[in-house]
Amino acid sequence: MKKFAAAALAALLSVCLFATALAYTPGTYTASAQGNNGPVTVTVTFDENAITDVKVGQNAETVGIRETAFEQVPMAIVTYQSLGVDVASGATNSSNAIINAVADCVAQAGGDAEALFAVEVVAEEEVVLTDCETDVLVIGAGGAGFSAAVSAAQNGAKVILVEKLAAVGGNTLRCGGAFNTYNPEGQKDIPMTAALKEAVEEVLAKENTSDAHAELKAEVQAQWDAYLASGSDKLFDSPEWHALQTLDAGDYIGDVKMVRALTADALNTLHWLTDNGVVWTDEVSTVVGALWNRSHQTPNVSGADIITALQANALAQGVELHLETKAEELIMEEGRVTGAILTNAKGEKVTVKASKGVIMATGGFSANVEMRVKYNGQWSDIGETMKTNNSEGATGDGITMGLAAGANLVGMEWIQLMPLNPVSGGGISGYVNSSLYFNKEGERFVAEDERRDVLAAGALAQTDKLFFILCDAEEAALRGRTEQVLGYMVSAGMMYTGNTIAELAQSCGVPAEALEATVAKFNEAVAADTKDEFGRTTWESAIDVGPFYASSFSPCVHHTMGGLQINEKTEVLDVNGNVIPGFYAAGEVTGGIHGTNRVGGNAVPDALCFGKIAGANAAAN
Image (cartoon, rainbow, N blue to C red; front, side):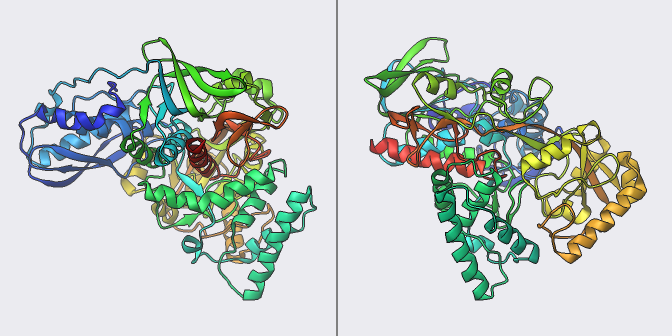
């Protein structure tokens, strides 16, 4: 994508309307064009003289690749009033689908698409960072960084936000947009089953591992007793139960104070994000590894919805954003972090002094193989043969800079594998409620609602380290897959299908009799609504409405639990447990919160809650 300074976006919108003298019939039009995984639907709004809005709708493009195209291409089309914009790097097919669908809408509105393809895109000269002073410097423009920048600006601070890559978003942009939080309103219609009750009792029955754990468990026990006495049949939940599940899922290695801080602030942060333009669907569900029905979801099942809203808000608040600007080292003066030395977009070394503080939000180290191998204490092989679905920018830079400033590291040995790295290339994979995992022998091998490390270990033990996720037509429709999208994915070899389970088994190359028996037993467990032989407790619907679909998956590196140690104020601590003045951190660059395993759907609230807290505290410094 041709670069333009984010801070100059508003000016560009007014300058670039000269692009064409075309007239349109005002209104909103919809069209679809072929993307990488199937049709991409786009809705375009016109006034008499210009394209005023481009929104990407239903699609099956790959999460983690599509987001850059979905953010950059519509913005560029509106900004330059041109269809001759560049495609997003690494997302050519998705970009072209958007451009071609917009061209269709132009024609529908009475415009001349060919003329718009010919409109030259002339980007303004980029504003490059130079030596300067600010109140707060935020390093890393992902979810944590944008959350910190917006929060600091809303609290009156002058903010500079830098990102080493050419595009914003980090891992938040690549994620599925799931946000875990207790939410009485959103969860009010979810039933509390016998299996879920048993899950609560099991966690409450575990031995205390510390005084802090005992205190938390006692609070949850009191809440549970009150819940049972009430006779309610709706889902039990609370910030404390969320915290206790998070600790349990991380084998009680996580810092209880930090986990409590996260779950106590999650609902407040959800509302804060809503106030800042993030939209959520009405359904509360359970994403893979989330363990409970508290996962809130963005409409496009993408963190791009979050990044787009926060970026717009940051620019509106006056945050100065610089891309392709890499922080190299922190500036320490009399034991305090007072700024950073960076390399700007022209390759020049510059110094930024930050009078109130520096917030590190550079993400983890999943994309740094050498660092993974060095710290790994969990998996037999975490090297080159293991892929990652993380941002290419997740190379541990912030951890390295923090170490040089005397920061303490915690939890570095714990590296999470995401079990759902696509092999066939597509599918309906991000939800637990009505899905079934089976191996090449046509058999289930794990409880699908288990922790992610358990799911990954189970998958790695299967033939060829491969497994399939099966769902029926009803579940596919519920997750927004149209017949058109499903048909394309099947024809492209991204998904297997069959009108019967036997036909699906043949398509997948697994024994039909075994898979039929597996599905029948699964459906019996759904009807019983109790814990099954694998320990699964989360049930929703039987798999019985054809046609049936399956896609194949294998684990990949997804999240690094270790990093800079922080306190509840997000202040970075040194090796003696003391605060390093002027130094804050949030998101995956930090450690000690998740323990040995991160609960699915906890990463986004982690980044955004602590980002918000870091911004407010730095601004008040």
